[in-house]
Amino acid sequence: MMSNCNHKKQLRQKGFALITFVLVLLLAGTAVMFSLLDGNQVKVAQDKKTALALSEAKNALIGFAARSGVAVGAARPGDLPCPDNYPSGHVNEGTSGSVFATTCNGNAIGRLPWKTLGIADLRDANGDRLWYAVSNNFKNNPRVYPLNSDTLGTISLRDSAGQLLNDGASGSGLVAVIFSPGVPIVRQDEVPQVRENANFNNPIHYLDIALGEDNQNFINGNVDGFISGIVKDVNGNVVLNDKVIAITQREIMTPVEKRVAAAVSNALLDHYCQPDAANYATKNCTGNIGNQFYPRPAVFSDTSCFGALSVLTCPSSIAENRGRIAVTLDAGAWNATSILRGTAVNNWFQRNGWREQTYYSVDVACVSPAVNCGGGLGLSLTLNNALNNPLSRVIVTMSGSSQIGQLRGTNPDKQNVLNYLEDENAVPLDDVFTRAAAGVAFNDYSVNIPQ
Image: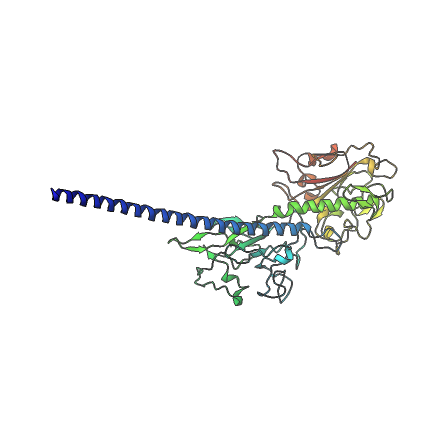
């Protein structure tokens, strides 16, 4: 009897031990699970911090390009700064340039110039400052001319599988790229990344190499560009952890074209009112002074208006109210402070070929002081989807980058309005223009001076 009791007792003890063992396993598994969850949460937070830093840097660069200059002698719209190549701790660290020069080399790469951009010292999740490379066509020192809607980016980018996303050699190149360098690794060329002050400006200690593409070295206008991670080798080891955010040509030019359109409409208002008497916000004069009319445009097909060098003719036409911005006007030349003159010296509008990219329309009631443009009578020029009154004294239309099928390489190409405008804007004889078009390739941008 006692033996049977002892046996039952032993069974109970084994049962308790088994339950205890199972509980221990459950607790251990739960601990591992929560550990993995915590690790994932940390990674998510780190990725978010890096993504926010890259996004803020991108927005700052686009804003810089759009703000760059609307006056004679000012920096041109579309300019991007050179990278920062100052040593760590230098008084100019965070600004564009280096201890050797303020200019960029032909393949400009370095740190993001956060002070020049007017933003905070952005860091990725690893605590590193961001890296930055800029297209040769968009850098502000030395400048390559012209820079306008048809200027192409020259930087190539591949995805983590090595596929070419943007080709800097064939028209789809990027304007700029920004990097988060990630944690230091041993590169595939067996260079260990050592991030100390002596290596602060050496990209090999921050940027990686994979699939034959080396991020610390690129060539403008070539398929040799950059690659974005994460990339792993056949054993699952990370060989490239650079995270890249790209800036395309359209992302830069969309706000730049708006900036140029506003500058042109303001210059036309200066002509109407006279300089210092124009209210750009209300699109009216501060007093009843000035010419009180707008100049007629040049004929769109007039070849004397073409080019980015000085244009000395490009006359206005007494028979036209649509075309390009004229240089020799029916009221005389533009004043010395206007961006719309034909001289290229210190004039970003002319020197960068924006006259070719700008379509100018003026209502027939506004081309002579003898008619009542100021009173808003008899206006028939219309801008659909205008942000203000669609009936307009003036409409300025930026053509945007050339679309598929639009050719602008030769004078005959440039004489054809269909190579610049789309949809309703390409049929200007009815004096009706639009800011938007559905179902067609459309990138025109228009502003108006309303009645």
